[in-house]
Image: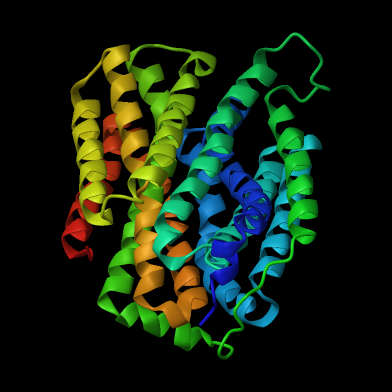
Length: 393
């Protein structure tokens, strides 16, 4: 068992390791640019809702393919090297849109972004467990989600600035977002690469059968589906919030893009507050309050047509959904402490919900308007209510 004496007796050394890891959490947030980016690509190329929603769906499709193999890769090369590899792939994904904005190029870019993020989310969360005490894992994962959310809510602002700015953006317009985040990815590679982090050696290399057999554990399976619902609600709100305002209020895309930022502002605030609350309050009651806020907001989105009311509902979803992932993830990791790499791969594979939900929402919204998309997200919230009943204290 790994000793945590160093992180207790030498807090400065611990913080020195946390800084580059938290910058990687910021880079992890780059994946959330797909929501606002897909809206701009849809406007630029005249795509239907279903066609535009392929972009965020494609990003999260790769979590299904790469998450479990990444868990196995970590057993071979270590968590830190896997995070560094993920950052290099993310760099490539952010470089491509600088070359153009064709549909094919964006599909390739978003695919690489999804692959890089699948590797990063699978390896970065357990890498954090090598730095902090186990009883502080949930709160530190929540703080990591807070840092990630900063990148998420900045993305719509940067894209909006690029689309409307009179100053030179090198002809990129809203795509100026990509080179800005690309530079940060480079800095993250340099900082993490120069930071020594002691890792616990894996007991043995795992096979696909070993990994997937863990889904036979009922709570691991429930957590896997819970992650799918969380990310489906996250990506769904990210993508659909501007469309609700455009459909009901008649806003332009540039004006409605604030809804995505509003979601991430409150998700960021929720992560920041949750990082402190979870050090003092048990996960289950905090999880219950979070799910109730989302349930209330989904009901409101079905009926409200005023801008203020819609903004309040979006804010409640952002705040409520902010701590769902770290709570589910930490509960799953601590259920099988000797299989954390494998469990991490399975949990991150659950981010495939980011593919299923937008596709279903795109089809539903083409048929029923944005109420159809809201109904799909509401199903995910109802499942989280069921998951809460099975949670450990």
